[in-house]
Image (cartoon, rainbow, N blue to C red; front, side, top):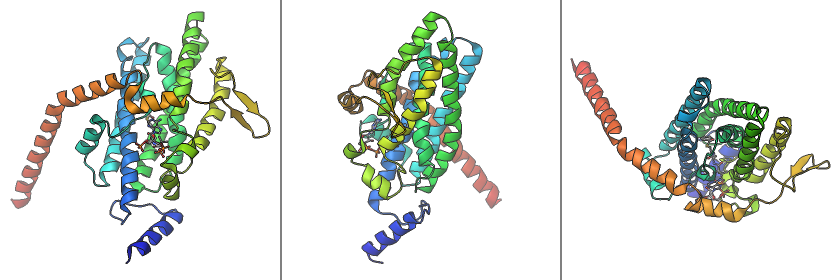
Length: 316
Ligand code: BYC
């Protein structure tokens, strides 16, 4: 088939809502787009373990500590599903990690903000996981099969994470005046970074066009951000907390909340490496990756030995 015929057939297949699988023919640009988005998504899950990990030893109760440990472990698992999905496109895990360490691959801007008090753990679950799941629910229908299947599993766990965060916020917001102040302070600091997670406005988002045509993305950044705002504002009201946006108002005609403008200078600063914790997050990841080299070597040696043993058994 001529290249144009292949491209047309590929697009028709996608338009018919079929999934693209690893061995199917795909345009190089589609492959690169998926590798970029899925690997960045995987890095976000793994780097996202750091701000929460900061509070494992200081969780206020054993119950809270157990829940937080389980949640952080889930995020590591999400990273593994996603790295595996990206590997089916022909990139190795080592290469993805190298791109992250060299600053060629991004991870979500939101994980470059510090967790200063226990209410931040509530705010991350409520707002960060809440924003993530809003995006990820739509990504369950992404056109790349392994990515879509990873999303199904991740979404189930992520909606649970959102609820554990909201539970912490509920306790803090209904606690002592000091706890209530901490809850409001956490909302003040995490609201805008959570909105930034959805990326630039659609008219400023260079990846959206191809992402939508190829159905890798199933909705634009602004639509998903709006969905998140519309469901989260009433949740803040229920807690008796105030969204830190003087321009926030309900528009009866559109049936949506309107917000003030995101600080895009801050967004661009953070995604280009100059946020409050970028250096700390990368240094930590590099150090732990180096320190964990022996675990990877041991696992590989074990796998080689098992393979050799199985081979010997098969021959015998
Ligand atoms: N942060 O054209 P655009 C979690 C980049 S973790 C950093 O709109 P696209 C959790 C973008 O990559 C789940 N970079 O791009 C874990 C692009 O740069 P490149 C996180 C951002 O791809 C632990 C450029 O800006 N979720 O749940 O169409 C604890 C132009 O943007 C950001 C995902 O990763 C950002 N916020 O849309 C708790 C979702 N926004 O690549 C929770 C998967 C934009 O050209 N990813 N950029 O150098 C996506 O859905 C899409 O990639 C995005 C961006 C919506 C993020």
